[in-house]
Length: 569
Image (cartoon, rainbow, N blue to C red; front, side, top):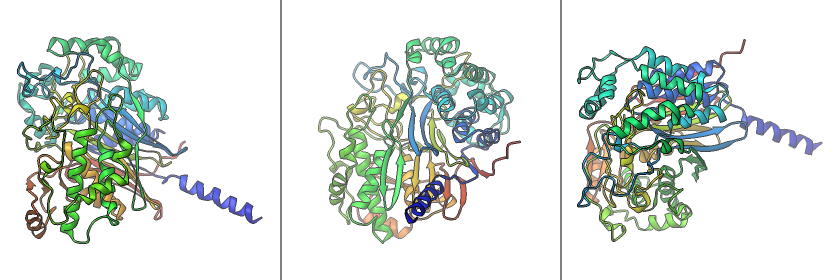
């Protein structure tokens, strides 16, 4: 009898752990994208259908950050079997790509060539991701999930201040692309705030995707237009590049820190490994960090410095590069890195060894607008299915090139490769052979969609922000582990270090005057940022309190919603 009772209790406990929150939650970088998720969830879709709807809608209303011409990482968790997987829709280098693609006859990098125009574009993964999510995880058809985006493209969306800021930043590049200029500009100038951007050609491409699935993009008429447009403007795409694109499902990086289980992106994202290294360094000393705020910031910065150094040396496309993942994520390795940290002195990045044959070039400052050229959304449905997705075109408006007749704005992800060993990309990140340009390779990324699971809570989070993504997600993880709510997480002030340039970048009010003075005394270079960085989107299910919450970063224009499913009639 006792054995039967214990068995029943175990069953009930398992059911309790698997039961969902009973409500839906969405946080995205644009209110119209959040509304698109609500629409498909109300139609009977699940979190994966919502992810398709949000992704497609963001590509219409936030063209500076994402779209069919880009890619990204979708971290998904299926509630019925507990499976978490990373859907890798990262772009790939075309077959004609080679290590000297952006170098002149003297071996010097040609400025702008990996940023503007079709030569900067890798083969998009986004259409494959939309089809894959709908077919393998969703309840609704791909066509149903794309309805909100198609409607937004046909009817238009109002221009907001963020769009105008990013378009102004990329005005020269947009003017150079006739089709992009026709869609997003008005006779070569910025549109008025509130003016509608209508995209009939994009709507037609979305309809073809809805009707034919990914084959409607990677084959046939759209593929022909994409390749012809790219090659006519100096690019190197071929029809085979599109036809051979392969989406990959990968095991995510799984970490354990202070009683929490952290699930994050695996290579070709550098996020999960870098976050794991930093968390392990914090834990290696027997505590997370010092009690004093200065000690805490100092240790976090030194952990960041070392993780970003390893990012440059070891990380790349796992299908083409042998990455020492086990070593990089071992506590033994982290303990060695922790022992090398001087508690009273900043370690100059030049003192951390690199490949002796690879000397980094001059590192430019991070761009001032890097929170708005990638995007993130977090979603959880009533059953507990969840998605954290970070998607991108790379730079604002990507390459600013739109092949005629497609409405598809292409990415400039080729800049995420190491254009030359030790040469910094537009975000100041350096790389070596592990991230060199090779045919069919995926470029290394910082996108870090993440789940944090504690005994009482489950969090879904991520953010755009270029090279700062990893450290912002780290701040979010630490806050969640310490019990912060969704609003607290997205509002918190942030600081960042990425090995090179050797400085602490921080938001206004992130570091107090005493902390700044003491950090400077220890040898840290401080770089206050006028503009805030990041646009974090967070969903947290507090199972102990039976409460679901969602929050959108006040630095952006997004929106978050928690709502009860409509009963089926």
